[in-house]
Image (cartoon, rainbow, N blue to C red; front, top):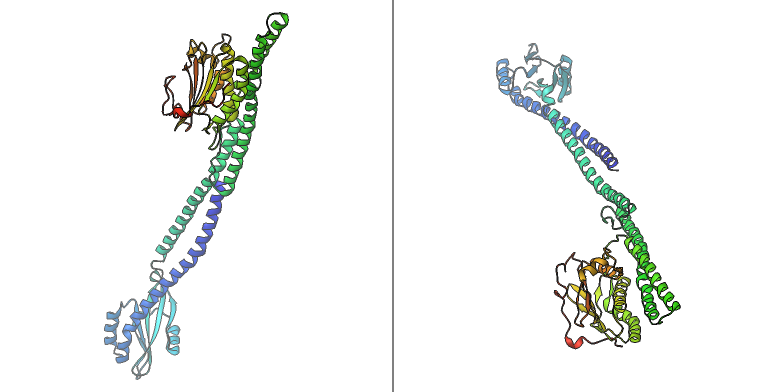
Length: 466
């Protein structure tokens, strides 16, 4: 495409240059000829007054010498008073041409060796007609024509080169978006789902880029839907399994009860394996764009409706703080629900019945903190627990819950910290960065709140209570 544009530009520019340069060159040549013969006419006119006064040979020779060179001018006088006609200066024009001009009485030109001769008739005082001949060399007729044509040729070549440069730049402007489109398609085919094409260039290529990006978004969305389906297992399967496990624990002793508990544990292990496999195969999707996310307060209230029923059965007290107003976060609704279910499931799984727990939401200028705390025995080694969350250990706990939470926080540039809660047990702090700055909360201690400001104590009221 690029070379095709260059060739078209060269052809069109060359035609335009020829169409203008050739007529202009001919005009320049005619102007040089007219200039040369105009000068010859002025020289001939300088002799005319003397001829109208006298025909004396000596005086006319002096006039001719003063008007021009003897080699370039001649005067042809007719016969008068019985005298023979004579010439002053060198004759170049043929005698018949001189007689023709004398008979016609008007200026004429005659081709001679090495140039042309201007023949101008002049009336004498006797009524006869004399002819003044001025020699115009060919070099004078073409004086400056070659230079002018060279300048025209240089201008034409410059125009052609300029058109090539402009066509090349236009070609680059068209080819680069096409190349970016090809590279984006290749990257998408290689599995780089974040590949996008800048929507720049000509209208057609810009529309193609828009269509490609829309297609890539659809592909990412399809894969994300599969990932969401796997994430749903973490709260649609593991959450009922937690309830089933707690209910199986109350069956007492006996072969049937032991078999039931063993079956529940086996089922939970299988579900954990499925979830871990799905999360390990999670594609690297593009970051959520502006407007993506959910209302954290709404999700917290919705999940607490589910867990409050189980808390009532086990005699657990609970509270929710600061979830009465909308809190927008750049996290998918299903991801936040899965993270909350994972943490609350850990509370029910690893703390005795009757242990209180709480969920707090703190909204700040650049981050949102979600705190899940309990009054249980706590976690002796928080770093080891986080390591299990990254899949580096196994001591009866798969760490999938913390892995779900950690992945959710890190997609926003936040992190997860484990510390001691005000209830006396464990506090898991989910730091969700709002502006997406990578690693903004890194290095902060478990109890650090950064720029997140708590609401006034009067608004820290429970939304639900068992």
